[in-house]
Structure formats: structure tokens, C-alpha cells
Length: 276
Picture 1: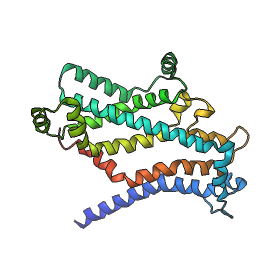
Picture 2: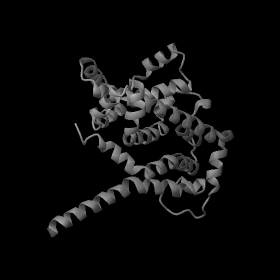
Picture 3: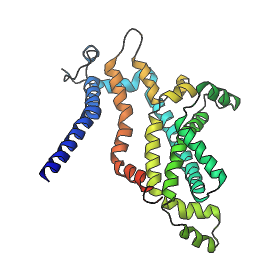
Picture 4: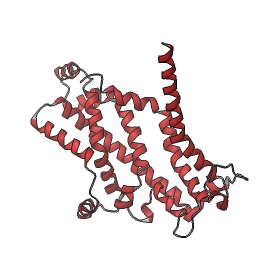
């Protein structure tokens, strides 16, 4: 018994140490260097700044005519409308696929699994967006984010719908409840745990997305927060103090969101495994 407790304690300690190495040290490294002057920050070490330059954060906001504020606006709009679209479409699709057990839903399930495994093809996607006249538009970028995240979200909703008793829906239909009202007034409120998980995970993923806006939403007027990092790096010189300050400002909102709602994320992820 003592040996088992000791091994469990060692396992917990090693997991904590690994977490510190992977998450805490990089964040501490960025924080310390964001408060240094440019020459000191270029040494890229973990030393404490000789003088704390809090004005670095003010300078980051003021760079290029407050481009960071505009980028925050673009990222917030992209994240908000993408998440709303994902919740509405994924919840309805997950519900239908789970409740129907026919050939069509099985084919759709296979396609969803392919969507999880196959990465998007950039050039054909740009061509399709140009044909639809949505390339370099916020609306087109929202559609891209929804398309990329929807397979995983539908899979989560399917699992959770399986925990809702079918008898509840049958009783509502007997009382004359139509399909739309049945879903939005009875089923959807019961999906709150997994919906919270999907909202948080998608918000973090989309807000932190760098590659897709770079390909599908080019242009300085459309820049998202991740693309502002280019403002402080160049071919011949880089302002690492301002770069790290920018990273801290970009990371902080989603980091706080993740810490606050961490339990809801875990609960929503495992809830669908209670029943088959």
C-alpha cells in the first residue's frame, strides 16, 4: 500500500513538473523579456529585467496607428460569429445524425470522420471562395472556420444527445410539439454542458488561428491579432521585447477564459461517454 501511494505521488509530481516545463516556463520567459529594453530582450534569457519597461505594452498598442486594436476587433468578430454558427449548425446536425439510424446518416458520419483527418487544400479553397465572391471577406473567413471545426463539434453533440432519453421527445410530440420547437425549447437547453465546451474550445482555437486568416483573409485591413506579430520582426532586426509583449496581450484573454471554464470543458468532453 505504501509503495502504491509513493508511486502515485511520484507520478503526480512528475506530471506537475512536466506541466511547469511545458506551460509555465515559456509564459515566464515571454513575460520577463516583454518588460526589458530592446537590447536586453534580444539576449533571449530568463534573467530579471534591470528596469521594468511597462511602457512596452503601451507602445505595442500604438504601433502602426493602433493596428492591434483593429486586429482585436477583427478577431472578436470572426470568433463570435463563427462560434454562433458552429453551435447552431453542429447541434442540429448532431441531433439528427444521432436520432436517425439510416444509410444517409452513416454516409454523413463517414464524411465527418474524413473531415477530421484530411487537411484543407488551400489553392482549391481559394478558387471556390473567389467563385463565390467571398475571398478576402470576413463572411468567407467565418465560413472557413465553421467548415474546419464542424466535424469535431458534431461528433461531440452526437455523443451527448445519446444521454438524453428518447421518451422525453416522444412525450413532447404526443403533446403536439413540432420539430423546430422540440429541438430549440426541449433538446437544446439539455445540451448546455457540451455547448459550453464547444463554445470555449472553438473560441480559443479560432481566436488563436494564424494560418487560415493568412491564406483566406489577406490584407492589412483584415489582420487578426496573430498577424500583428509581424509588426515587430524583420529580416534584419527584431524588437523581441515588443514581440513578447504582443504575444502576452494576445494570449491573455483566451488564457483567462480557459482557466475559468476549465471544469466545464472537461465535463462536456466526457459527458457523452456515459451512454453509448
